[in-house]
Amino acid sequence: MRFLVVGAGSWGTAFTRVLLDREHDVVLACRSSEQAQAIAKTGWNPHYLQGVDLRAAEPLPLADAPDDVDAVVVAVPSKAFAAVVEALPGDAPVISLAKGLDPATGERLSTRVHHRPVAVLSGPNMAEEIAEGLPTAAVIASEDGGLAGDLQDAINSSLFRVYVNPDLVGVELCGAAKNVIALAAGAVDGLRLGDNAKASLIARGLAEMARLGEAAGARAETFAGLAGIGDLVVTCWSRYGRNRHAGELIAQGLTPERAMAEIGQTVEGLTTAPVLRDLSHRLGVELPVTEGVCSVLSGQSITELAAGLMGRRPTEE
Picture 1 (cartoon, rainbow, N blue to C red):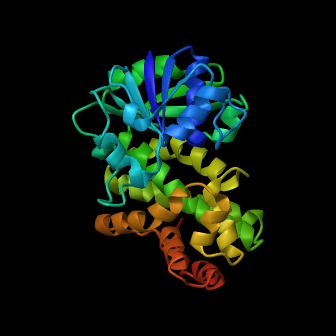
Picture 2: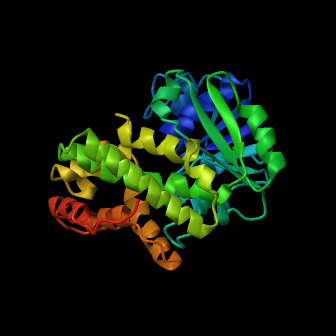
C-alpha cells in the first residue's frame, strides 16, 4: 500500500518505520521544508528519534502532500488535528494516531473527519521502544469493519501485533483520558508517595475512564484491553511517558508551561484535562482524578489536592 504519514514527530517517525518494515511505500509529510530536506539528505529525522532509518521514505513538506495514496496516517497533536484533516488532499481513509479530544468542540477527534472513512490506532505504543524494534500490540477501531480488517492485514507484524476493536468511542476516550490520569501518576512520583499510592491512583483512574465510557456508549471490554489498561499502565509508568514526566515536574514546583518547555514536546494531557472535565459534566459523570488535575493546573496546591482525594467519603468500589 501507499501511505501518507502526516506529522514527523516521535510517533509519526516511529510509525513510518513500522510501515516501511512491512515494505509499504511511505510519504512522510513534515511540518517544514527544512525538516523534509534534512530527512531526504541524511535519511534521519533531525529532531526526533534520530536513530530511525528513514532512507526508504519519501519526505515532503505538508503543503506538497500527494492525493494518490491508499491511506493517510495523521500523527499530530489533538489541537492541530481538525485543521490538518480539513486540509488533506484526496479522499483516502484517515488513520488517527492522535490521543486527545478536540479542544474547540470537546468532541472525539474522529468526528472531525468528514467525507472519508476513519480509523483510530491506539494501545501501549511508546514511540521510543518501537523505534528500538521492541515488540508491542495495538488496536485499530473503526465503524467500517472492512477498513479495520484491511489495515490490520497491512500493519500487523511479528513486532507490532494488531487487533481489531469495533468500539471507536471507547478506544478514543481511553486514548484521551489516560493522558490525564498519567499527569496525576507523575505527580505521585514527584511527591514520592510510593508505588502503592501510584497503583491505587491508576486503578481509580481506570474506573473513571470506564464510567465515562459507559456514559458515552462505549463497551466495557475496551477499558480492560490494550487501548484501556494497556495504554494507561505504560503511560503512567514508562520513563518515556511525557504526561507522567510533566506531572512529576509540576509536583516538584514547575508551572505546566515550564514543564512542557523542559520536556520539549507536546504533552497532550495538559490540553485534554479541561476538555475531558467539561465532557464529564455534560454527561453527568464524576471524575475526581480529572477534576483534581484541572484544579492543580489552575493553581491549587498539589499537596492539598492529595489530602482532599484521600479524605473523600469512603464508598463501594
